[in-house]
Image 1 (cartoon, rainbow, N blue to C red):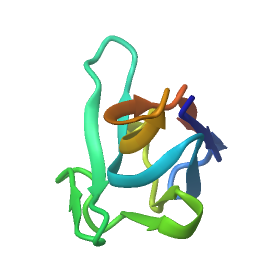
Image 2 (cartoon, rainbow, N blue to C red):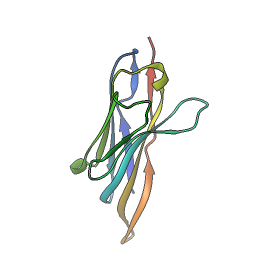
Image 3 (cartoon, rainbow, N blue to C red):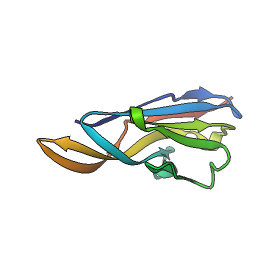
Image 4 (cartoon, rainbow, N blue to C red):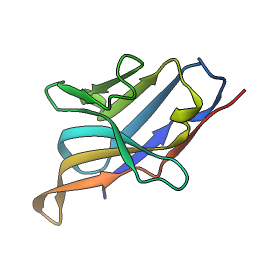
Length: 123
């Protein structure tokens, strides 16, 4: 069974920084794209940043220049470094990964989501 486990959320003052981590585990062959999404109360889930297996990145306009996505392929982990946080960044942040894995002797490719981690930006 493949699982994504996030960590690193918390409360920070405006202008502060946080680093989120998301580790994938299970019968993983390889991981294609990985990404971070967020959902604020009453709003739809939105893309924050994505990274391909080759390291190409894509960011939402609202976070460009402040957030950096990276990944450690050897450890099946994706990170999100968030700097200059403001109250508009407050949300539950979710990790998403497109994973090639084994199940019952066959290879599958599925999208998995983490459980979410809360980021609160408040003075």
